[in-house]
Length: 98
Image (cartoon, rainbow, N blue to C red; front, side):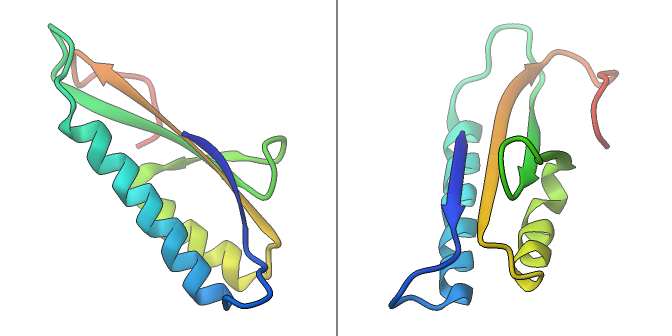
């Protein structure tokens, strides 16, 4: 999932937009978790990036994604770029963000 969300809308207030962004992300994560894992995979790892643009996005642990979105919204960001990549992992000793 790669998507840029705008936090400004003439009729919808920013907190409501942030809630809809979070809902869409949770819906995507649920959809990915419900899919069957490939043979030999133990679990899914979600690699997430978050920023105002694709160029400024930084890696964020998926458990901290919602908190980071709230922080960006309180810092008056105009847009939020979210990138989530689901990867099947075969063992617990992977190289990634904890």
